[in-house]
Length: 138
Image 1 (cartoon, rainbow, N blue to C red):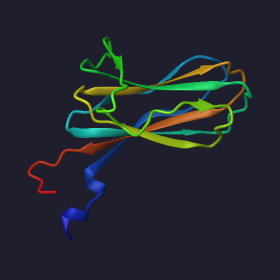
Image 2: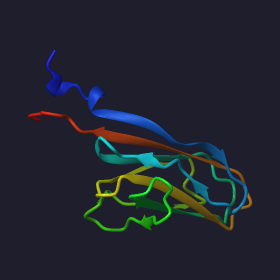
Image 3: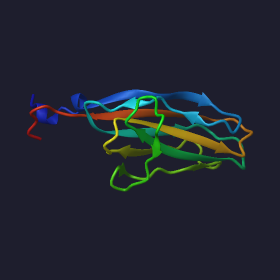
C-alpha cells in the first residue's frame, strides 16, 4: 500500500480538554498543546445540551513560545488561523465546531469563558496535530 494515502500516520489526536460539566462562569482552559514536530493543529470542540437560556460561551485560541503560556497572546490573525474561532450561545446544543492554528508559536491552547451561565452542560476539546513528514514528496 502506498504511504501517499496513509492519512493515519499524518495526524496525532491529543486530549486538550476532557468533558467538563459547567454550571458557573468559571473559564475552562484546555491543556497546552506542544506543536514541536507539527505543521499545525486543528482544535475540535463539542458541546452537550446547554441548559441555561441566557448563557454565552466565548471561545478563544492562545499561543506562546513558552510552555507555561506566561506571555500568551490571543490568536486573531487570518494568516495564523484555519477557519473561524466561533462562540457558543445557549441554543448551540450538541454542536461540533473546529478551527486550526498554523502560526510560528510552539504552544497553543483554547479557553472557553461562560457568561451568565447557571445551568448545566459540557464541553470537550480534542487537538489534532498535523505531523511534519521528513523527506516527504507530498
